[in-house]
Length: 372
Ligand SMILES: [Zn+2]
Image 1 (spheres, rainbow, N blue to C red):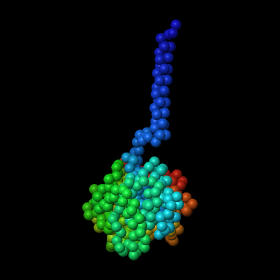
Image 2 (image 1 turned 180 degrees about the vertical axis):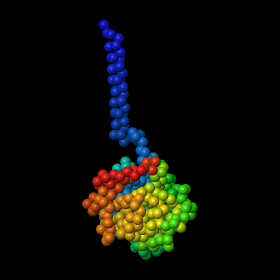
Image 3 (image 1 turned 180 degrees about the horizontal axis):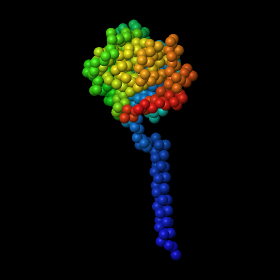
Image 4 (image 1 turned 90 degrees about the vertical axis):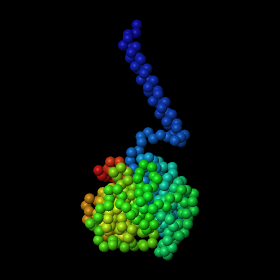
């Protein structure tokens, strides 16, 4: 005779077996979908804005991936073997395009939704044509054509622009004006400056006089394309990034002097790779970043004068993409430098939450620092 309690135990066991079977089936279906390359639903929705500051050794390449899965790349480094003015080569040898691709793969991307070219110098857009051979680029954002004097100042600018225009014709094109918002899902991106023009109205929460302004700021080292850089403010909840490319001279000064038009930002990618023409204290005083990142190379950017300005503001942590060999520079501790020499090509990654907190990770050492 089977007792009632035994029967109940058997029923319960059967119930567990059935539940286990259905879980196994669900996992198998999901695995099959993933293997078949079917569009998969993310198991856990992303909740961070991820920013990869890629070391292109004195150029710029910043990849931003929003929690909505949209990708926004700002510049793509040097062409070919990493030298100035070399012709665009085969993508397999393209040092910087390969580095951008590695970051894109790390983020799980299959395409770049939006590429912004800050300006037409080889250290920023030289790698674009090679990158386009490695991963599709859907839309292009830039300041329009370079001026005639840009070619005189930096020979080769026009040829790079023409190669880029041929590529750009295959996608969408946006030529934004200061104050415009870019159509990037999951994040608020406002144009601060472009083509030499700057915001006329302050961003929300900004607009106060800046007591740190004096004189007319530091003159731009290069006066044609750099001051025409497209600059953006990227906001996700209470977190924000200020990225001005190589914006220098009067347009950079005008962003925070005499009136602060932009307000505070959590992370600031220091203008012009940390060069001396990005060292005016007035901008740092207005923006008050917790983290200032320098996308410097061994001898590019990261000048002693900029370090000295930031050292006056002890609340700012500097992180460097590369150790600097410039005279008079006291580099940050190794854990805050992505690459100590040219033997590695790590990035600095920032993962930001809506509440404004963010984690900075050194891709070479795994060292992390959390900012609340
Ligand atoms: Zn540059």
